[in-house]
Every structure is written in C-alpha cells, then in structure tokens.
Amino acid sequence: MRRDYFICVFLLCICVSLFYVCFMPLYFVYGGVVPREFGPMETTFSWIYLILVFLVLPIYAAYKKKFWMAAGLAAYGIVAAFPVWVLPGMADKLAGEDASIVAVVWAFLLKSVYGMAEAPFAPITRAFGDSFVEVLPRRIMPVALILYAGCQLFRFYRNAYRQEQLDPMKALDKTSIENNLTGIGTKTVRKASMPEVLGTVITAPAPAAKEEKREPSLPEE
Image (cartoon, rainbow, N blue to C red; front, side, top):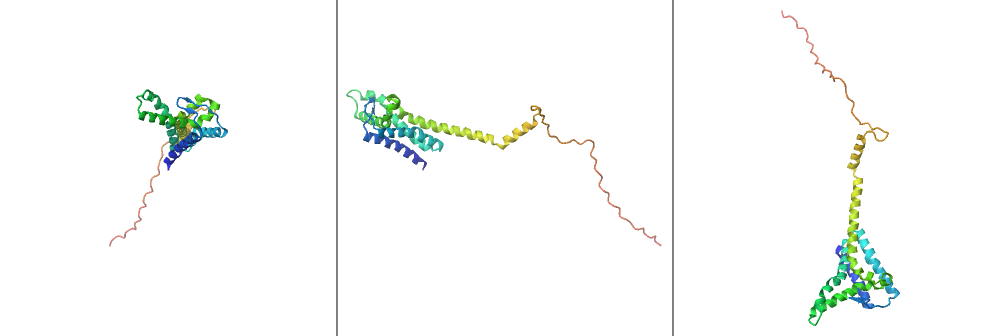
C-alpha cells in the first residue's frame, strides 16, 4: 500500500507533462526555446502544477511521514534531470556522419523527455523568465528530499526535547539539587535532617519468671 504512493505521484507528474506535450506546442526544446503565446487556462494549470509539485506534495509527504510519496516525486525529478546529465556527453557521438542509429534514437528519446519535463512550467516564464523556469524540473528532487529530511530531523529533536522536559527522573534530580542549595537570594534553605539522640539508650530487663510456690512438706514420722 505504501508503494502505491510512489507509483501514483510518479505517474501523476508524467501524465500532467504528457498532457501539455500532446495538446500544446513545446516552448522549451533542448538547446533553445520556441517562442509562442500562452492561454489563460494553460497558465492557470501551470501555476497549480508548480504549487502542487514544489509545495503541496513535498510538505504533505514530510508532515504525514509519507516517504514513498516523497520518493515518487524525487524519482520524477531524476527523470526530468537525466537528459541534461547525459546529452552533453553524447555530443561527440552525434557529430559527423559516423553517428550510430542507436545513439541518434537514444538522443531523440532524451530530448523528448527534456521537452516533456519542461512543458508544464513554460507559461510561468512570463513571471520569472526563461533562465529561472528552465531549471525548475531539476529542482524537484532536491526540494522533495530536503523538505522530507528536514521535517523529520526537526520532529526528532522536538520530541527529544519534550521528552527530556517531561522526564520525571530529571524533575526529581532538579528538586534534590535545589533542596541541597543554601543561600539562594535572600532565602536560606535548610537541609532536612533526623534528630540526634543524646545519651545511651537503656532497655528494661525482661520480667523474670515467677517462682513456683512450693507447699511445705510434712515431716515424716
């Protein structure tokens, strides 16, 4: 059941990206942009997607301890960043007439993934600019993991602090230390002590056993 969160979040992000790719022309392509106009509905859904990916899902996963939800979001972030990691190293394989078909097909797939991941954020460029929006898909993974880890660390130290404050043994130790202190401010705390007994304790002797009364015996004739 917990792993279903991973699949649902991962597929949700891919479905939204594919929706933009299927019904809207690409704005970001690998190596540049293709300028176009953005409609109001497209812009509205882009803002909803931005808030969902960077705020709602990471915060909810961290607050509710849904690790697999955060993992699914981070996995999508890895997929979105993968083309930028791999494509620069394939420039030599794609240059010239000696480029293999496998390399060309692989590069085409990576460029398609790049355009898919960038598509939902394209309408936000009117507010933040191309350079800021272009790197947003590669920020999904660190945001999801950092928020989850930071929330769990904060919760751990907060619970440890509360447990320390509510520890009865610590309260008893603190009370005993305060009782042993003398001259606190203008008040003086006396130590409780048992009264001493002066002299020697004398115990009364046990009552002697009563002697049995003997009747006088008659003299024998």
